Image 1 (cartoon, rainbow, N blue to C red):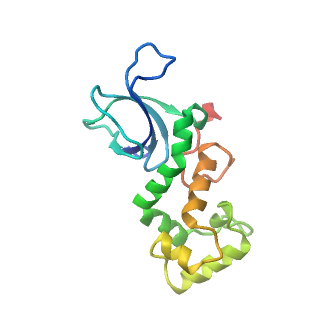
Image 2 (image 1 turned 30 degrees about the vertical axis):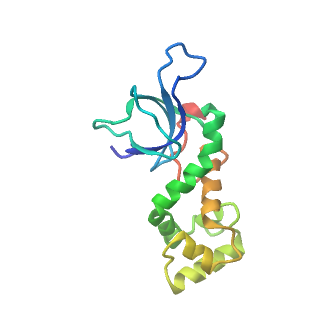
Length: 187
């Protein structure tokens, strides 16, 4: 199993399918909950999906999804999906908050000169020092706790959403923190 997504969140729903396809089967574009993998799926007839809805896409019987059609690159998303994606990522961050707070609590140096936290745009040497000092005194308990204890740092949820968006668009060339790196043939 390992790198499989079990749940995904709806970022677009096309009840009549793509206008370019004749089949007209309902499709949805989804963002995976664990590795932020982007998917296009065919939706079982009679199901209406809503933006930000969490649905099961694992190996067992699926309620809403007929089949996973393909993995998508960011460029293959619909305009609506691209617009909806940051809101969806913020919801996933809240849903999996403990994982991301854990990242702030556990992140370490990658080299003598570079710390994992510095890979997030908006966290430079000064914020890094503040984060490390604050977490040494007491581990962070929530994203809101990080924001409250480091008021001069930008909102951590927004920083994480921006980083995940950059990783999804392959704007990073190494050190993927949250997104499954693109397959070699997709680069």
